[in-house]
Amino acid sequence: MTYSSMLIHESHRKSSMWSKFRCKNSWIVLFLINAFVIQSILYYKEICKWDEIKQEIDIIMGNERITHTLAHSVLKRLHRIITGVDKDKLNLDENSGVIYAITPTFVRPVQKAELTRLSQTFMHIPNFHWIVVEDAPLETPLVTKLLADSDLTYTQLAAQTPKNYKLGRTDPNWKKPRGVEQRNAALRWIRDNLKTSDKGVVFFADDDNTYSIKLFNEMLKVKKVGVWPVGLVGGLMVEKPICDNATNKVLGFNSVWKPDRPFPVDMAGFAIGLNLLLENRDAWFSYEVQGGYQESAILQQLITKDQLEPLADCCTKVYVWHTRTEPPLLNAEQMLIKKGKRSNAGIEV
Ligand code: UGA
Ligand code: MN
Image (cartoon, rainbow, N blue to C red; front, side):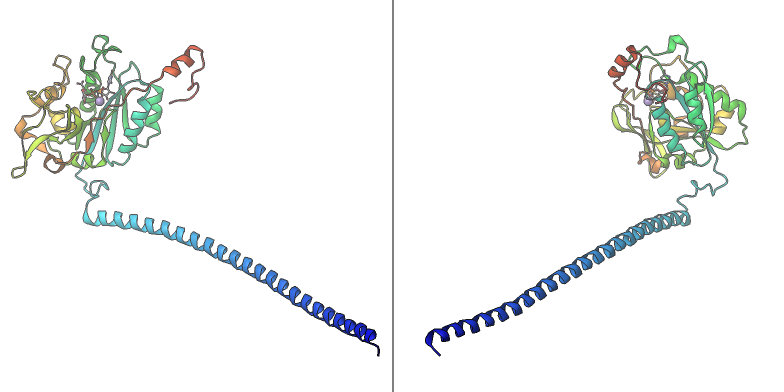
C-alpha cells in the first residue's frame, strides 16, 4: 500500500466515524427536544390544573365568607333577642304603643330625597304611624306615591300655611315660624281619630333632620313628655337637658341660644304621650309666639319642667341631629328650563 492510498483509507475511516457520531448525536438532540416539549406541556397542564383548583378554592372561600357573615348576623340577632335588646323592635312587649311621627313638608327640589331618607329610617320601626302634612292646598302626587310605595302605616294630610305667615324666598328662616299649620292639622287628626284607651306617643319629625333608630326605642318609654339631646342645633354640637343621675330628673338645660325660653329645646328633642294630648284638647301650636318659642308654647300647655322624663341614658346620648339640607345649585337647570329642555322632563326627582 502506497503512502497516498493509506491517507485516503484513513480519511474514509474518519468520515464514516464522524457521520456515525453525528447520527447518534441528532438522536440525542431530538430526544432532548422531545423531552423538553413534553415537560413544557406537562408543566403547562400542571399550571392549568392548579389554576382551576385555585379558582375552585376561591369560590369555596367566597361561599364560606358569605356563610360566615350570614351566620354572624344571625347569631348577633339571636343574641339581641335573647338579651331583650330588640324587645321593643320586635314588638314582644304588648304594652308598647304606637309612635305617631308628625312631619310637615313642602314642595322643593330636595323634598323627595328628604322624605325617602325618612321613610327608609321609619321602615325599621314597628308600630309606627307616619302623619305627613303637606304645606299645600291639596295632597300632591309625589308624596302620595312615595307613601303608597313605602310599606309604612301613614296618614297623608294637606294644610297650607296662610300667605302672611309663609316665608318669602329671600327671608331668613327665623323670620316666621314653620310647620305651625301642619302640626296643628296633625294634632286635630289625632284628636278626631284616637281614643284615650289607645296607647302611643307623638313626636314631631321635621323632614330635614337625621334620626337614629335608637331614638324610637327611647320614645316608647315616654309617659307624659320625654326629652333627650339633639345634635347640631342652637349653635352647639349638642343641645341637651341636664340630667341628674341620682334622681333621673331634668335639672336644667345647656342651651346658649335664647336660654330664657321656658323649654329651651328643639322640636326634635321631645315626644309627648298620646294621652296627654288627648286630655288637653286645647293645646296647639301658635303663630303668636316669638321665633324659637314654638316648642315652649306647646309644652307649657301640657306640663311643667319638673315633670320632664329624661331619656337616652340620662341625656348623654345623641340619637337625632338637626341637619339642614343645603338647597342645591340649579343654575344649569334654569338655562335648560328657558330652552324648554329640562333635565327631568318625565322623570320624578
Ligand atoms: C327649627 C325647628 O327645628 C323646627 O321644628 C321649627 O319649626 C322651626 O325652627 C321654627 O322655629 O319654626 P328649622 O330647621 O329652622 O327648624 O325649620 P325647617 O326645617 O325649615 O322647618 C320645619 C318643618 O316645617 C320641616 O319639616 C319643613 O319641611 C316644614 N316647612 C318648612 C313647611 O312645611 N313649610 C315651609 O314653608 C317651610
Ligand atoms: Mn329643619
